Image (cartoon, rainbow, N blue to C red; front, top):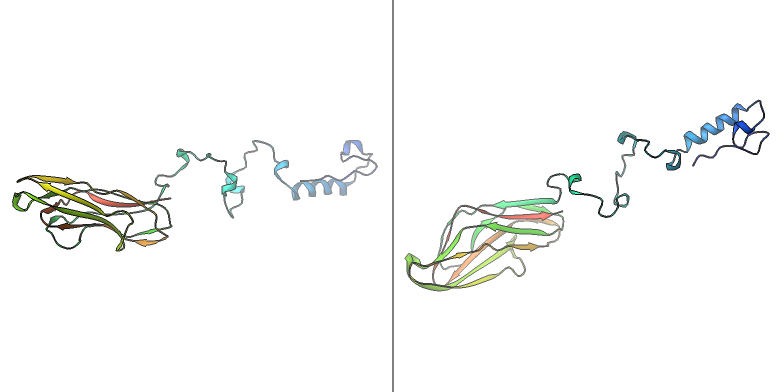
Length: 209
């Protein structure tokens, strides 16, 4: 805060209360105080300080923002998403065997936020050549080969001749540590039946900011 000097022959800081001649040194001291100590109290409300006049070091820090002050119009499109990956199935018919990759997302590099895994896939389980069948189908979501916790889904299926069952694509929220990952959906059939996967749709992995 600027502090003006007491004027010669007066107990006040105003020139109007000081006897003449006024002291040029005291005027100079007043100006030094004003221009050398411009703080918030010296700036009028609504002064309209331009952005170019503001410091460019740390920018606007969280402490400068009131809680719940940032609204949707202030956010850039996509600001709530840090990164995302996607993949489309190659399609095909899968018979009882080991674990098969159904669709693999492109790699994403996360910073430790929640990753939403969702998809829209056409998957149908039926008896081979349309015959009646019963068996199990296991779907798994994997993160760079590691099974994502609680994402092993086992379907016990049974269909009459010419019957089929539509299999939903699993959705999940994963919270891995920061790193680069490849998410994929796998399927494994046991006992009997076949899984037909269309080439349409896809699987997506989206990390939120």
